[in-house]
Length: 311
Image 1 (cartoon, helix red, strand yellow):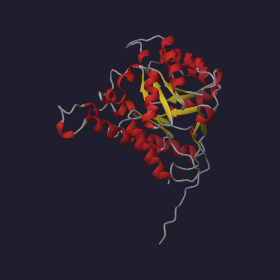
Image 2: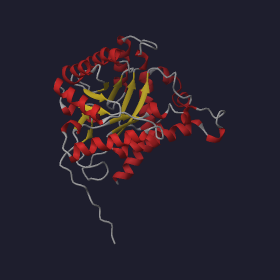
Image 3: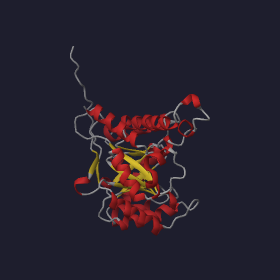
Image 4: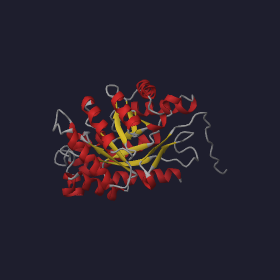
């Protein structure tokens, strides 16, 4: 018997969020059913991550990028060329008050230089210090007005500042970060819309974990969010999901243990890529509309997977 594809019909639809400008702009979301089960033509976007502080990055990235690691603009340009990514994430880790405590002005200058060096949409990630990120992302939003970047991410402690500056005053996109909990994700989306940020200007970062490290909580959260948004037509959960798997994937023992400590595990770089691809693939099929990885080979593999699933 010939195979007949059966498509589930839902009453809801995921919002479309456009990032970037001009011919380089991309649309995220828009599906009316679970990812890869419909024919709308929408597909997950793949991003490549860079940072302005690579001290904690694996040695393999020095081999890949060389001296460009010390120059964020050159690093960004090389990362895009080597990965073929749809967008780029810049992590301003040096801003961390408990680390280098780089000034807001210096970090903003880095963001501006990186944006000018690439021709694809830009996502700006702070240092995960809520107070510093509020100041930093507000100034980034101002300096990059008109570039339609994503401020990654707003949390409960700073969403008012980031939402007002990014999604309203300077016309950027705002990503709402919650910790693997559908109720927290929904609450933050509601708070941002009540503040005045339009739903089409919001993305969700619902949390992540490396495959094998509590990832089942991430999977179940994504499932519940997607089914509530599509099946229950819950507008507060019809927000596209953006997931950065790079930090979790490259932070577990399988990725960081040197060959000398675990020779039976094989090449360290290959292990890191394997962890990243496994985690990213699980997020993509689970409902993430935009996935962010660190290694160029991971980006290529996930892009190939998506193309194969779409057919």
